[in-house]
Image (cartoon, rainbow, N blue to C red; front, side, top):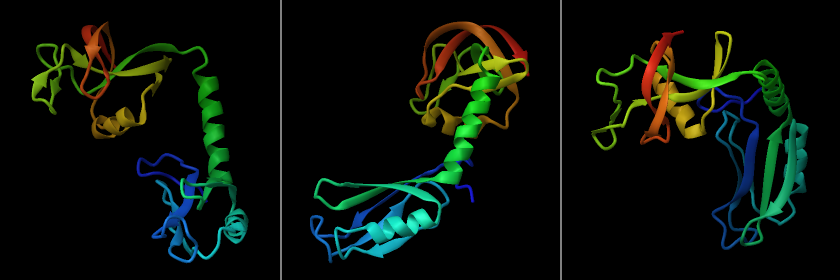
Length: 188
């Protein structure tokens, strides 16, 4: 089983921590598995600081676990799903090899706006230029170089036509993206 987040990316991380307790005291709450992946939710009664039975159950189900403590001294179990993490590592290695000699540049999803300025919908103003994503290119293949926030933005525009954009960076957009004075556009 491979676990994925809501953006369909493999995600191997989960945390098991105490909820509904009285300042970390056993007997007054439960331990729950929290994750952003599609891993099934789980709960255990919080009866003791000893969580070795939970660790054993998770490890039997393919997880690697590390036990720590929260600010109240209650147990916190950090979990990595082994098979999902192996897939993440394999994808990262493949991408690193494929893009080892890549050229950095910019990509845009959707036509460049008339007038050369993207609209900042949050503030209802115009940016200083055209909003783009940073990317790496190797042949006709590309990969985005962005943080998770911009990656989420990508999912709102990824069905639009794709362009490689050349120009000078003139600022940063409201989502933290580069903003260009565009000199040349090539449809991919």
